[in-house]
Image 1 (cartoon, rainbow, N blue to C red):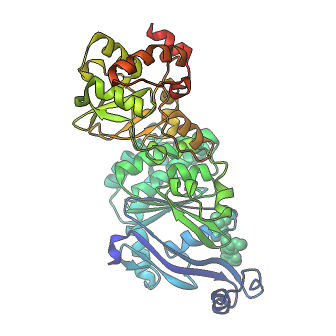
Image 2 (tube, rainbow, N blue to C red):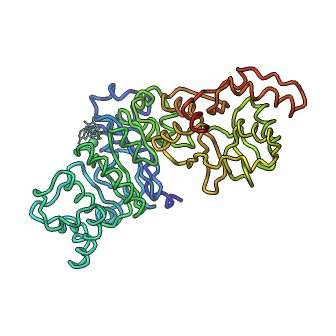
Image 3 (cartoon, rainbow, N blue to C red):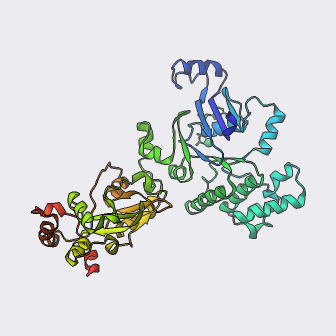
Length: 444
Ligand SMILES: Nc1ncnc2c1ncn2[C@@H]1O[C@H](COP(=O)(O)OP(=O)(O)OP(=O)(O)O)[C@@H](O)[C@H]1O
Ligand SMILES: [Mg+2]
């Protein structure tokens, strides 16, 4: 049933020119857009996608790639040359003019790059305009417009006229107008492109907040990749009229469908797109606290590691370092719980790398990625993080910890003999780990 999608675009074509059917036939027969240019401009070629309710779906591509043409077909402003658009289970393409008006009024509103505000109306009346068209009474529409204006931070300027506002404020009025209409679906064509970077950033954040609060479905068009990555739950990348890849920002960044997309995304700020779960690795170095001090020592030795995560009922308790283990062994302690360092830094799977980099730098051991129940679902060693930021593949099982290797060998060797009951052959290389004198000093 198509009703489960907010929007469904099925094999959409749009050809401007006198012979659309012939151009479509040519395209289907494998001819290029350029070869057919004399007969018409193929602005959109065989575009199919679905948008889920509550999703922010971004259509991204260079100028002329067909973005605006697609979005205009979604609300029936442009009829497709072939294919069909279905909105909330109803065909827009086959709708009569009357039905189409109703769909636009009740289901879809559109926000343009330059908001066509009505110059002789106040901010409040501009924001209430869509409701006025819907026939909502004056008091009610003003009350609803006020509510939305407050959400976009314009409650102090309701009586101002558009020419008294800055560009960013005008943009907000336009957004408020579209939101006030109360439609489930918002189409936004380069809605923030005219804004300067700081205000634009603010609007992006506000849009995400509003969307989370109001649960609208948004189709957002942009040619700005960072904007697309920041806003989009999913992104469709367009090139010369075709959708060349549809995926989450992470999928598009980490698994570009072709060289074009790869080149396109190479300058994206990855820290703002990738989340902990995208770069984390399986947590190999972990053990239950019930394994005791001896268990920890054995694991550290087997794995040639210098720290291990301790779990209780599969939940993360903290980190046990080789140093602590050795001290415990010397002191004859057996309970691992007593030597767990519970100050371990954790991150959530959905945390953006930009928000965890600082913690990674501070953490002597890999960052622990834990779910809502504090279950350890992955680890992020610093090298992994750096590799992800630099876009080079990395696999590592190394668990670097801050400790001087030389000192460690001296401390370790006799103990390993004693505890494991066999001669230990610990070379400096076995415990060679990044040395961080500063953190080492803090322990003294
Ligand atoms: N009404 C029209 N008549 C003829 N050609 C058109 C028309 N509208 C768009 N085109 C052409 O269709 C192609 C796609 O245009 P469209 O406006 O969809 O691109 P876009 O991706 O929105 O670009 P931009 O980022 O510049 O807004 C372009 O080659 C354009 O010249
Ligand atoms: Mg456009």
